[in-house]
Amino acid sequence: MPIITEVISSEIVQTILALEEDHFSDLKSFQIKPAKLSRTIAAFANADGGELYIGINEEEVDGNKVRKWDGFSDIEAANGHIQIFEQLFPLGQDFNYTFLKNKECNGLVLKVEVFRTREIVKASDGKPYKRRGAQSLPVDTAEDIDRLRYDKGIVSFETETIDIDVERISESDTIQKYLPIIAPTQEPEKWLKKQFLIRDGKPTVGGILLFDDEPQAILPKRSSVKIYRYTTLEPKRESLAFEPITIEGCIYQQIADAVNTTINKLEDIKVLTATGFSNVKYPEVALQEIITNAVLHRDYSIAADTHIRIFDNRIEIESPGKLPGHITVTNILNEQLARNGSIVRLIHKFPNPPNKDVGEGLDAAFEAMVDLRLKEPIIEERENSVIVFIRHEPLDSPADIIAEFLSHHSEINNSKARQICHIGSENVMKRIFQKMMESGIIERIPERKGNATAYRLVENNN
Image 1 (spheres, helix red, strand yellow):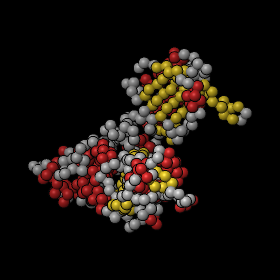
Image 2: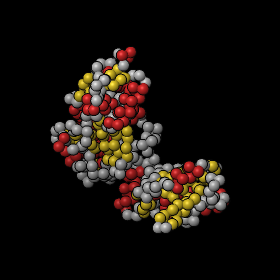
Image 3: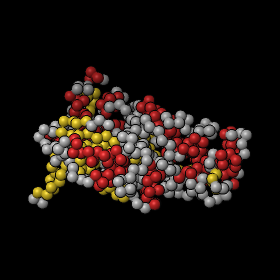
Image 4: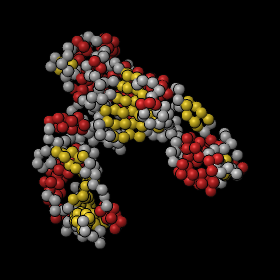
């Protein structure tokens, strides 16, 4: 791998020196032992990736910690550190490194970009580490190592066996209903064994989720979908419109029921638009694909249900478990990795499968939102879950929305404008009004001041 030396400005030097060490960033002296360095690199690789700068000293001056640029004398001086990368990533993948140089600073700082890896990476002491805040912590218990395997998608809980009778799935109403469609010439138990949904005489988690009539009786608190409707913009218990709805049953029926229930509960929600109040509208394909993705790709080893929270201005769909392997919120639309491969593959054989376009579901959801002139969903990864925010926010600019509103109404004030533009700050809206006035689109209504201030289209725009 060629080593690039990049000349950077003094401003960038100061930015690096001021970096806060956290979950994604770390700074080290060039005197750090390569063995110790390997812990930080392994921790980044086993978590969410990060950036490491080698050649930054930290000294105490008058009781304060002061950082200083103090890099390698030349490229060869960093050979011992670079060898660590080759040991941890023998194929030369999953990291980038660059030497940073500034004519006013001493030496070369080695910048290392470490990416999230598919496999577990161990430091030179043979232990895996994981990043927690600004620390690189050893993963040294069997339970923690198993959790890391699940998080990275190396193993899936769907293959675990459950100590119950195989008849729960081989003689269920669900398999009697769908096997004639999926594999019409097969006997249930033989087919289930061939698909590795029965192993060692016991059904697997995947087999139970697909073909048990009531998986929730066997996998409580980890195999249901719960739907909430809040009458405010925050998830407060007192603002629940009704008791949470629990969706159960086999995973195929559960997805269909969750989608239909969500769509049904949206019918009573009205939002203010440029033309007045109207029923809230989300593209059904977006709801279908995102709910399907949340149920099929969740981590079933975590004792938590899938949650769908409906607000006036958004829907939140929370799926237990981190993104698997090398998948991140930035590459999720371009990369593929099925955590529960058997479930994803076999449910695709069902009639009118929920995952119609395997690997393209989220792409379709994003496109459908834009087609309806709504902003794309936001995907957020948290400590033990992934949340997709489907926002009922127009794609048009605030100025366009205000102008459209005023083409149907005689005036608009700050409060109403914030409501239709989904902007929380009164001052932000004031600045938008100011720019529109400077452009000659709107004008302040004379004699309307203070709380009564309002705006209208200028005469030649009416």
